[in-house]
Length: 296
Length: 295
Image 1 (tube, rainbow over the protein chains, first blue to last red):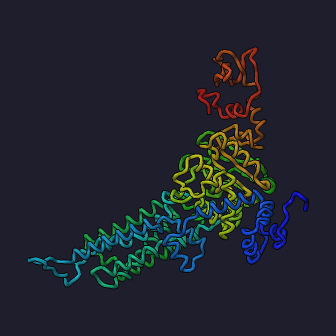
Image 2: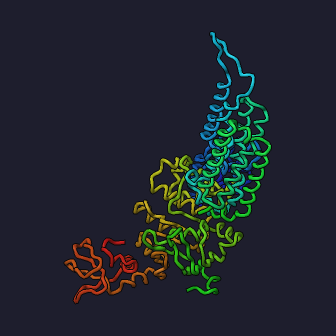
């Protein structure tokens, strides 16, 4: 050491201070140095002499990055509680249909549909404060909910993959992360997050309890059909076609049978299962189109 | 034209590549071989630059033709993955999740690039932010950034992971002169010996940083060579005069008040001047022979 270089205090060896400045100490030694240096003027001067301006700038940049990274939202916290790795949770959190505003919108739609059905089922009797709940189910009052509920997961999947809602889709297409894997995890997360409140809302309806379960397969079939079709035609067109097809079926049933129960009966469940399997098969068979960022 | 042996040695090798969008031919039997270094891609709007870059970046597939990128064939899924692991891509119209902060956006892209360790990701994000001089904006929401800052952010995401292949579509659009110079500096400081493909309308940027230039016109390669060779395309066809010469195909008054002409036959006694790469590009693109409005 030359005479111009600051000496240590005699308590802490200068080599320990140098190692600390270079980030080469184990955590226990790090703590020892950090406990000692604030109260020792000689070591503070010594530490300054070892400080690398480039490293300081890099540390500052890393600190700013750390501050710039937002805390996980409710979905992110839920995912991490469920053991989803942090990087996967971050990928999922970027999905538009897993954001708080989207989930609030879903809950609002469900609340309106359920509230409407409940109110329509209440019959006001003559006289002040007199009302009664209809003893039998009026299926017509459930029609808005039954028409909309299976479309909610489809809308969530659309929001997860529609290019206008995923402005950075080109980056995902050019990245090494598997698009098929991304499709699977995002679809699973969005469908789950949308289906759970939908099924719970169905339980709150003035209808049979089995309705909550009967909704699931048609909803999944719509998602599977749309994603499968999206490997053949443009995703936006596929999603619109499937949604239009469902609404066409709903209107046809309402006009011909006067009720939508047939859309959730045994035949409908078997058909939905077949459609879901066909959609999954199409996705697997044509996964190369997904790898290129869907149909161009 | 590239032969099959050439596919193995060139960093990027393209043979008879074609791509159509409906009735529009975006690329028409394009063949070109590119070595390592910075390569400029010039051409007017609609020439097929973005289509070619998208295919090289593996976000689009060609209708026909052969392609080798860093020795890998993008048609094969496993080899396509290897290309993507070595790729940094800045699309022409890069969209942003506007609610993201700058740091969160880069963190997101770093995850897409398989940097799963959070500490490594933070260090890498900090590195690229410093490289594009956006460290102070790490906490800012993307929607609050200016157009030039967003372009720099786009460049930063392309630099994540120190890619061996950088494909940059219009990287300097919206950048002020100082930032354009910083961009040139950045390209010069890239570690290793990467392949950089740079599509731009700024011929002076190509002259300043590129070792090779490809001129694409109407989906076909019209020129492939050095910037000096591009300038050579206009040799003997550029002259200065005090008055505008009616026989010139393109004329404009320079800062010193004299007229600079580009044409096929300079008049007798004309002061022939050394052409620039821009002159060469104008001659090639035919802008000098159309309406004189430039390229």
